[in-house]
Length: 204
Length: 204
DNA sequence: CACAAAAACAGAATTGACTCAATTTTAGAA
DNA sequence: TTCTAAAATTGAGTCAATTCTGTTTTTGTG
Image: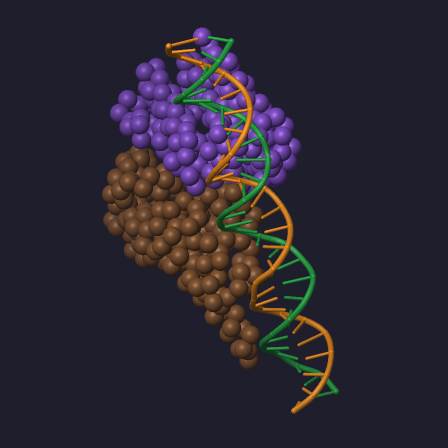
C-alpha cells in the first residue's frame, strides 16, 4: 500500500518546495523567512525542520532539480556533437549557462554555492558536489565522443582535460553570478576564448 | 601628530583581529561567538561592529593578510622561474597551496570563500575578488616571463591562459578545503596532471 | 474495533548576530 | 584651563534561524 502517511509526506515536501521557490524569487533568499515559507506551505515551522536540516537545504532541493535538468539537456549534445571541437564545447557549455538562469536568480545561485562550500557535509553540500562531478563527467563524455569520431587527438588525457574545462567554466560562472550586471554573452565569449587554447592543443 | 585616537584605533583593530584569529582556530568560525571575541579583545560588541561590518569581515581581514603573504612569496618565482614551463607552474602553485594552510584552517577557508560569494559587495567580498585577480595576474606575469626567456611560445594568448590556470587551480583548492581528509600532495599532483595538457600546448 | 508503539507535527523557547539610542572620551578653540 | 562639537564606545534590545518537548496522527496487531 502506498500509505496515507507516505502520500501526505510527498505532498508536504512539494508544498514546502513550491512555497519556498516562490518566496525566494519574490523576496530573495534572506528575505524569505522560514515562518513565511511555513505559512504559505500550510505546515508548521517544526515540520519544515523535520523535512530539511536547515534553510539552505530547502534552496538546495530547488537547485538540484534545476541542475538535473541541465544535465538532461546536455545529453543531446554528447549524443550528437557539432562537427568540430570548438563548437562542440561551446554548445555544451552554452546549454549549461543558458539553462542555469532559467529558474534560479543570480542571488539564489550565490547562496547555493556559498552553502555548498560552507557546509560540504550537509545533504545539499554533498548533493552539490555530486552534481559538479556529473557535469565534469558529461564534459569528459563529450571529449571521449569527439575522440571516437576522430575530431580530437586520441593521446589526450581526457579525464584531466574534462576537469580543466569544467573547473574553468565553473569558476567563471561563480564570478558571473557574483556580479549582477555581468551578461551571459560576455561570460560565454570569455570562456570560449579560454577554451580556444585547449581546442588548439587537442584538435586533430 | 599621530594622535591618541588614531593609536587607540589601531590598537583596537589589532586586538580584535588577534582575539578573533585565536578563537576561530580554537572553536571554528561558527563556534567563535562575537561576544567572546569582544570579551577577549576587551572591547564591547558595539565597538566590533564599529570596526567591521559583520562577522565575515573580521575573518576577511585575517584572510587578506594571509593571501598577501602568498602573493609576496610568489614574486620570487616570477622573478627567477625554474628552467621549464612545467616546473615553473608547479613551483608557483606549490607556493600558493603550501602557504595557504599556514595560518588558516580548512574551515576558515570554507567560511571565507562562502562569504565572498554570498556577499560579493561587502568590503571583504570585494577584497577577495581583488585578491583572486592579483593571483591571476601573477600567473599571467609568470607566463609572460617564460615567453620572454623563450621557454614558452610567443603566440599564446597569455591572458586567457593565466585565467585558465588560475581558475582550475582555485576550483581544485575549493574542493580540497571542502574535504577535511584531502591531502596537499594529492591536490598538487592532480593540478600538475591537469596542467600537463597546457604545458604540452605552450612549451616551445 | 481497540490499543500501543512509532512517526510526524506544532509552536514556544533558545540562541546568537546585529542595531541603535544613550553615554563617554577626545580634539582643539577661546 | 574650560568648554563644545565630533567621534567613539557601550550593552540592552531586536530579529530570525534553529531546537526542543509535549501532543496528535497513523499504522499494525490481536
